[in-house]
Image (tube, rainbow, N blue to C red; front, side, top):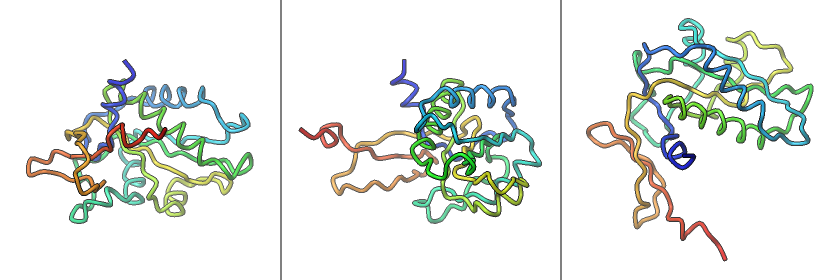
Length: 189
């Protein structure tokens, strides 16, 4: 059921790095994105896929992780993603793809959740560094990175606290807590 997949589709940031993901599975996920609606049907996004350990080591340093967790620099070796999909904007086609980016990224992440994978959509990327590391042509601009793997952490949805704080946090057992607004607060009229 879609609601179950949406609930499982959390932002995971720690993985079983040694559990590999087949490249064919990532190609299937990009195949889902290919079928999505896109502004003016331009289909301007391209995808760089990595399941290779050495290539993953080139991607990882370009990423920033969990801004609210000030005392955490990201997953340690052994808990890093085992795969990445780098979302690229083909600037020969369009330079205004922010809506497409969201649609495609969420579709890929829902597909990943259906496969019992977890991931994190990362927009805080040193894009020029990553572009150089991957030797991308100038017309392909890095816009997002989807970090993927088998989750090594539990992520739970919490009721929004009385003070309205949206800050996610980890407890002493490493469980990641994410506050969400009540449905009544979201619906207007």
